[in-house]
Image (cartoon, rainbow, N blue to C red; front, side, top):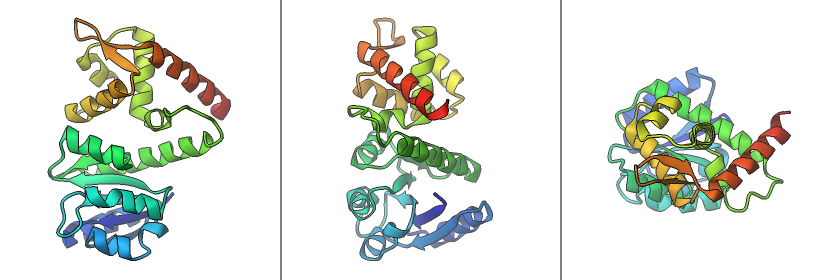
Length: 216
């Protein structure tokens, strides 16, 4: 999981990211457009893609399904200066696994890339386990931590969850909580406190079993 393809129409960004990633032990390739990456074999020869959403020609959001068709195992991290919760969720629904907003700190990007690698290994370890549609939710470490935190504390405010997860970006925390709500794993009571649903409690049991199988 060390081959990274950078798809962005900003040449300076491509070159700078490529240099930093290579310095940190990754093998990189670059493309100036989604169309170029789709037409060539670039997507098929990478593990992780850093994909700009807003580019001339084929937009990154429209290309996600095409990249996954070419390489079903690819992990796509969306990079955009126009990130919103809704556009990020749409990208996730199409198959992306993470997003980061421009301008971003390179160290933050490296943390996300390493987390995506960790999550990919988690998925590979569970490849023979039937999670009944919750694999995508459990594969994210922040969402797993949220589920465990709510199990330990029963109920929590948004600020408590942010502090526990050590997430500085409130939008990113809200994004992951929305994913968990839409999966019916968590809910809010009349006081706006987050808690696990009955389905969430079952997911937690599944998570504990799979982690025990993987790590013990």
